[in-house]
Image (tube, helix red, strand yellow):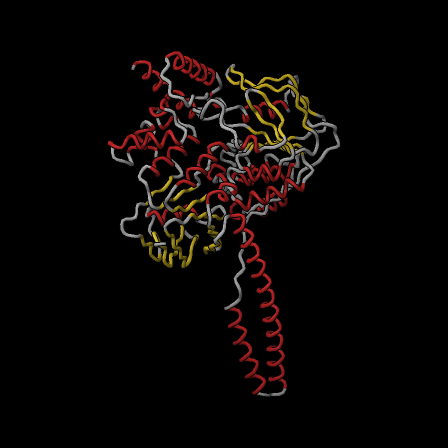
Length: 565
């Protein structure tokens, strides 16, 4: 197949950090490539270089003449916030081809009602689907996708797999979702150590090939080191004898051997440094008969019932997954469960032996102007040396310990929260989307740490591989009730109830996927949105959610216009 795009001897740095050195890559028509690497390895930068958004420091990016190249952005440009959904897509295509934009949007789960929604009112998952539509509408030969699976529920992930499977062009995809990569990509690129490694297999197969290659390189390197050590010892003996016996021949042989050692040192087999992350999440156990129990419980938001729990007991050592499509109330339930741990008189009955740890998907706790060392110090009773040791083990060098939490990336903040949890050693760990901000190596380390611990877990995640590996019990929020299922595949292959969701958060209301201009439904939605706004404005300012307020107001504008039509 013809080569569409080629990187030739590309080197590039960000500030003082070199990302690539002498990197080569050729992408041909029909290639379906996964790009995998540690956080900070330069994956997004490489996509920008290939897409023409950034010029390399050294080397060349060559494109086939007439190539139609499109990128699925990681974030929507702010300038689109006040545009309608359909206008944001037609911007990429001629106005007379609006039908193509609408067809794509419908295929991606948008209803006709949602075509006129303002982009700023969309949830994170809806924005991802919109960015996908903006890229596909130009019918590209080559598609560059940077983390398109962020914020997506499992149903939308399956939809994306289907659409990429039907896509006729080539693509290069960055993602930390292993099941998604296995489902859509036939080749895998690993970006690490400023180099690119290419394997002609899906991620899972390529991962095993990479591991085998690393082990072989390590064995070869060890043999080389032994040979060099032996030669050094021999050269030293010959040099000593040459001096003692005043023998020029022995001295020459020693110098010749030293030159040989220098050549061998230069040609030593390269061994990867691996990830800086060394996750150590030691958790506690308990001999209590149960961790927490609840019965006849209703989970509500803004006086609207989300689902009911008839009877639920979580026992020590169980690793429970909480399943449900976006908007059914998973996060609302988890926040209520966590809040009940310190509040008496609730419907949640905790064992006195339970110690709770909580990982919040929004990482709200990991914010503010504290330094990372201060953040840990304020939450863990420990000496300074132990705190520093845990930070270093988690991949934070000593020089970064005074870095402000507010200036840390999502991945760094996630690691910092894991440091606190590891030091607290809870026996009941509640984790809401713990895999959102960590790379694949981090996920695999987290899986191993959780599997080897005695802790009880309650986990939500959109990462199918993570849930399949860790969970031993599955609870599904389905048709307004919490039910236990033995096969999570029932959930993975299910459709969202009633359609795709609207505003971001568990307070989101389902917008039907069927075409409807029914005034009664519009009025009903307006009342619900006004109730949500009133309830949020009634909270103390520091507990309000300005982003959600803006989205609700934007949707109200659209619905009021709808009534006037």
